[in-house]
Image (cartoon, rainbow, N blue to C red; front, top):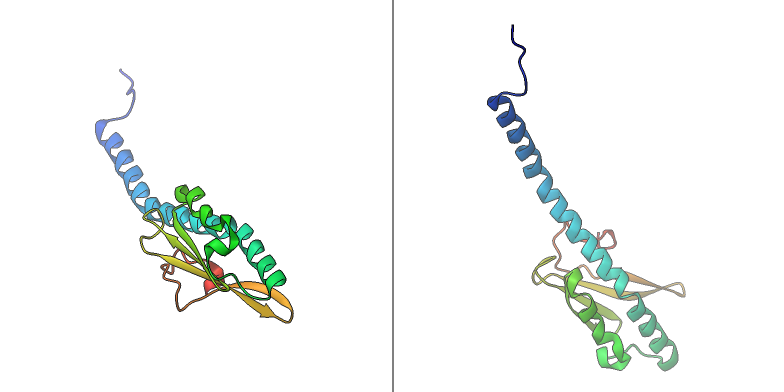
Length: 141
């Protein structure tokens, strides 16, 4: 009597089909995860801009009119192109982060400084934030 060795072709095809189905289910979830992480990275990368804006407000009594009022703030977008950021624009107490195709083409996240009982907090401006709901940060809900 001869013992059976290895797997049959049909068994191998079933395993490959199962792996393909699992990959097809996991891929969209992973893509959303990477987009959300790029948005979170963009928010954390503007921390230095937030600090400069608050300092400008504290010393001058007004918010900066644009990027050039803070000097190097306009160069931040260039260092975040890998993270999907196409531009960062400062207008008054708002920071607008525009995203490219790695996150959402034409997607914009707008953060605005809010004075709450003497504490300055940054909130998402929902009327002008155009990121889709599945990659929008929790501060925008």
